[in-house]
Length: 222
Ligand SMILES: [Zn+2]
Image 1 (cartoon, rainbow, N blue to C red):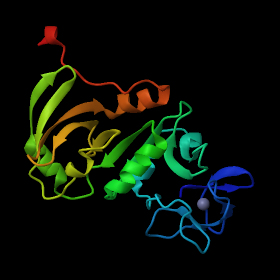
Image 2: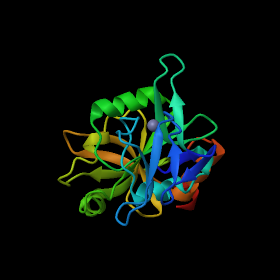
Image 3: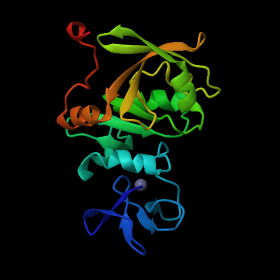
Image 4: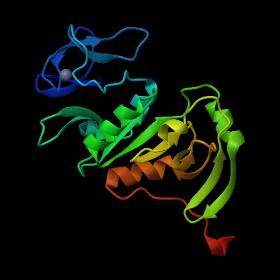
């Protein structure tokens, strides 16, 4: 994790620092090695949140777009008491999960059901050829408002299949200036539609608690 509680404050890992988990209060040790990004780990036990994913620079870069208080926030179900750590939880009660590794569809459903008001941002650069297949497969636009492009998926990975039936909005991050919302995808025909939105606007919308914008082509300007 990026943060632990040290002397009552949310703190990043520093060599030899000790802290407590903001989610379960267990003792945490700072891991400040040369290979992995500096982080906190539960002392002598696995993470208290089974949904926790080892952080990458990609996760950190995204979290950095939001205030510290919004990062790694415990979300507690008021009825069951079940608790998990949201990557970003805004003061508006809205959760953003950044997903790098492949997630089993059962866990995906569970997470969507738990957070309810959430979206996914998915790392599209996890597999080296996915960006190339995305660029080859995209055509259009097929719709101007909101702007949508057709996507044929010829990639060997199941990047789009894995998110096709998500109950939450899914935004693919291929490292460019835009995110691509997966609007629809037919897993059998390997075809769907995606809509671009600038990352800057996406972040602004999330920060302001606004609905996330969609792009469009102004009919009169064409
Ligand atoms: Zn914990």
